Image (cartoon, rainbow over all chains, first blue to last red; front, side, top):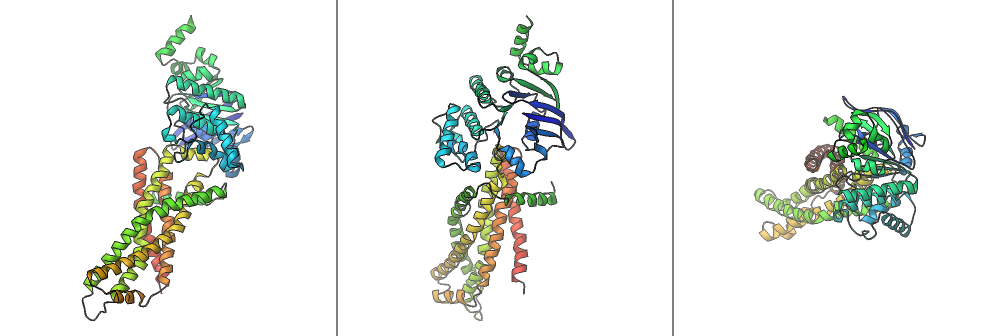
Amino acid sequence: MIEVKGLNKSFGENHVLQDINAKFYKGKVNIIIGQSGSGKTVLTKCMVGLHDVDSGTIEYDGLDFASLDFQDKTKIRKDIGMLFQAGALFDSMTVEENVMFPLSMFTNQSLAERRERANFCLQRVTLPNANALYPSELSGGMKKRVAIARAIAMNPKYLYCDEPNSGLDPKTGLVIDKLIQEITEEYNITTIVITHDMNSVIEIGDNIHFIYKGKKWWEGSKEEILRTENKEVNDFVYASEFMKMVKKDLAK
Amino acid sequence: MGPLAHIGRYVIWMGRVFRKPEKWGIYRRRIFEEVQNVGYNSVGLVAIVSLFMGAVLTIQLAYNLSSPLIPLYTVGLGVRDSILLEFAPTIISIILAGKVGSSIAGEIGTMRVTDQIDALDIMGVNSTGYLVGPKIIAAMISNPIIVLISMILGITGGWLAGILTGEVSSSTYIYGIQYWFQPYYITYALIKTVVFAVIITSIPAYFGYFTKGGALEVGRASTVSVVYSIMVILIFNLLLTQMLLHK
């Protein structure tokens, strides 16, 4: 489990995150939603240590990440997998080399063992014949799958997904969402998905956090978010015509 | 961000470059790859520039030394000292700052704006050490070799120009390049080259590493890094010359 307590982060005069308290549960897909500029990405970057926090704690299974030194942070980071919005694959490496990279850096496995693990991960994300391709030769959906394969190569305890289906067609987006859900349940990991796609929220969200103007505004399940009376959450959830139709159906 | 803040951040960042590597074997392999990128790929350019510069130096010196009181072997001596003391270590380093530096800033800047550096950091890899350390070490190994090649080719270019134009005979030129030869000049040139190698690689890498934005900012970082590298090379050239040649 990951627990954030009293987290504050400012950039100059801009108080981006204000007293954020949130719990992200193991074996669940925890979703962070909110409008662009609400602080979702900054919150995630603080949680993975890419930004230093001004105050507050981030506990990974009881261990305060923010207070650790570089060496101890590295130990926790080895348990973190991250899927970036654009994949963030190393473009000078092939797909197989990308997936093998964390294994090469942090394990003493032989090349054959690393290859076997990479092939297993690539098969798990249903991308078995792309080993020799470079990221520039992949479609958006394939890049996301390779990024997921790389993220799970080290058997992480925690998986972060930053807008996993942005830039994808709805069908491929759904495939990626389902893959994240399956992997979360299969490996019993703490998954955090940052998104503003309500389809993802409804499809895979177990525990949803709504961030509004840098504050943790609301928390609940996907069933609760559809019926909440909170104005800001409602404005966000039912912004599209499609969701307005869903709302009418729910009201019947 | 002011110059002092940049210097402070650069010093702290350089401290991270030389942290203990996660795996020596991977870093060793990266150094060999970078010797190819940073050093070997520049040999052709350096060879052409050195040959022509040596040739031009010979012709200019021969043209200027028209007095019968000055012996003609001075042309060889002048070409040799110009190339050993200044052209090979400094001018070649400035050329490499343009060629290699812009490439390093572009490569690392692109990795920054496409989240590849964040991906390394989140994995627990020391991104600075992994990306920049091997480049610096590769340049410190390969640049002195390139500069030695430049010295040989520059002096050869001068010799060829002397013969082909008929300005200086082969024997006179060879006598000139042997006359009052100071082996310390080569040591001095190589010390400068190693210092410049660190500048050529680390400054562009620094600007690339802290790039924010997109393609436009990567291009800007690349240009700015070359300008700063050249300025720092010139400053260090003056300081090192004063330190190493001061009697």
